[in-house]
Length: 214
Image 1 (cartoon, one colour):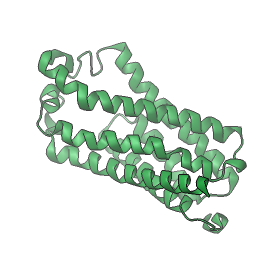
Image 2 (cartoon, rainbow, N blue to C red; image 1 turned 90 degrees about the vertical axis):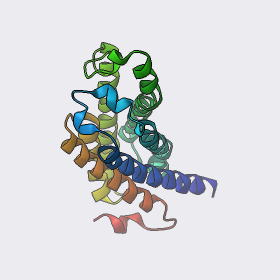
Image 3 (tube, rainbow, N blue to C red; image 1 turned 120 degrees about the vertical axis):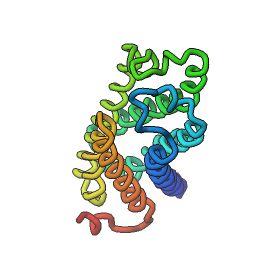
């Protein structure tokens, strides 16, 4: 059926996106001067590897955004309103996160060359402007709330493996709202592992998913 092909495609997009997000996250401290970013943030942005590495993150989060509805479509008839609200709120968070990744990847380097002060740690384009701060907070809030609501609703359907759902419920808020690298890293690992695990489960046609609720 066509809907099954769509679900399998979205599951594949989610898997590729989750793997790509992990690659992006762990390549940054290897190829970018992260340790010096607190003092010379603009130098981090102007590094030759900045755009290449962050494009991986941009493409990955875009794929996750496109693939996320597949989790809902797989058993949409079993979801209550909470699941639908979770889908919408989480999707808004993913779109906002994609937008942030877009301007950080492509617009920050151009701005740093024209006006370096904008990209200092307290610069207007980093966290020195209320609009930038509001966007960052909104993205994390929508992501966290959306995935929590969706995860709880998915647990109530008794149609998905529970462990990856808990990974998402815990991991996404930690990643989206964490303020230090170790916490965000733990959150990202749970987010990506949960996404890959859940994506694999929805790609299996004709499987009695209740057998996987362990």
